[in-house]
Image (cartoon, rainbow, N blue to C red; front, top):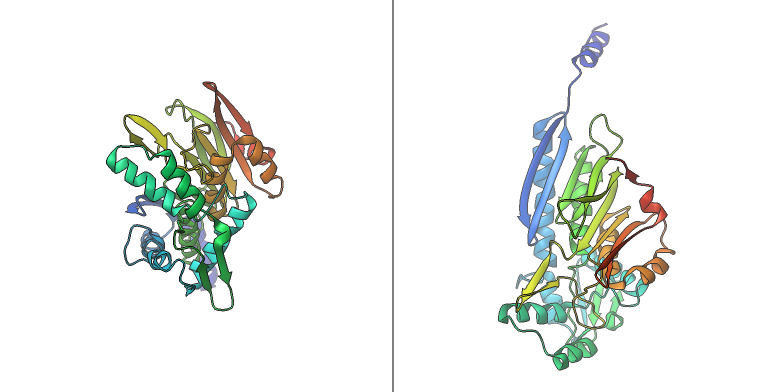
Length: 330
């Protein structure tokens, strides 16, 4: 009888979940957590643990930190095999998968090109055509990376090559953070990491999280709304992340085939089952453009994509059927 009374009391109490929000600066941008919990302390502890995981990954995968594992691996390029942590090995493998899938449009060995453009920005001078050409021909090439799964070893076969996880790393970090949040009992929340989003469940009383995709030309406008539940969304574009040289604005996304910043795809939004894949695909599609991307996407199930392209000062919007399935009215 007591058990029945306690159960009924719990039902009638109708505990309402509370929204807990936190934001942190890590990996060069802001990661935001918005979680619903019946216990506020549970939310706070889950966020703390997820944030610690992202910081740990930053210490491993950063190309800015002298003591990161990535820096160590790149310093040993051309010297033979290097043993790495299993998760580092797996992320490299996933990066190579997308490098192969896109024929090098997404290339995890883009590190030297990014270094070249960072230096150009610091000196406010465009890199010369000869320097760009040499960097592309000698220092870019994912096929010169060999993986040895037996001992989780990586071999970078040229001393000029440099791995960079900038096109996939934040997505991977979100997936790791979400795994921790779910293991702590979080069933409703959203993680936003500089354009990479993962929606856990749905807000109370809703079917999913409502996400607006900005107009890259008129950022005060929203192109469309999508409703997402337990899925990742990644947006890449030059309207928020860019750099300037000599008064000109350039996209932060570099084409590894030419060495030049992309200039014809202002915005790409990808919806995928995990943030790692969404991050890599949004980067790749920004470089490939619409026509090539449509061909590549034919081999990928349940991936939604919206591409805003610019040609002769005119903008067009392409949405595949999977993306349209997530669209809702405001």
